[in-house]
Length: 120
Image (cartoon, rainbow, N blue to C red):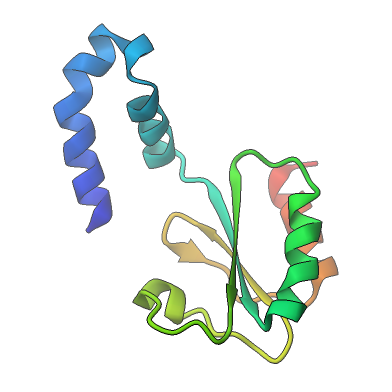
C-alpha cells in the first residue's frame, strides 16, 4: 500500500526532479529508498536485553542500515512490527523492504550475518 503511494508521489514529482534536482534533496532521498530500501535491523526483547545489541550495531558505521529497538512490552504496534515477536532475551530480524529474516537470538550470529551481507 505505502509503496503504491510512494510511486505515485515520485511520478508526480518527476518533472521537478529532472528539471531541478539540486532543489529536490528530500525527493531524491525518497527515490533512493524506494529503489534500494535500506537494511532495517529490528530488535525485540526486554530493554536490558536489547540495549547491548543496539549499542553493538550502532558502533559500526552503516549509513544504509536503520536499527529499531522495540521493547517487548510496547502495545499497539502496527501489524508488521507486532508480528516480530519478542523473546525472553533479545531477538533481531534483518529486513530489506517488507521481507525479513528469521529471528537471530545470538548477537555474534547477527553481526556475522550483517558482515556477510555487506561484503566486508
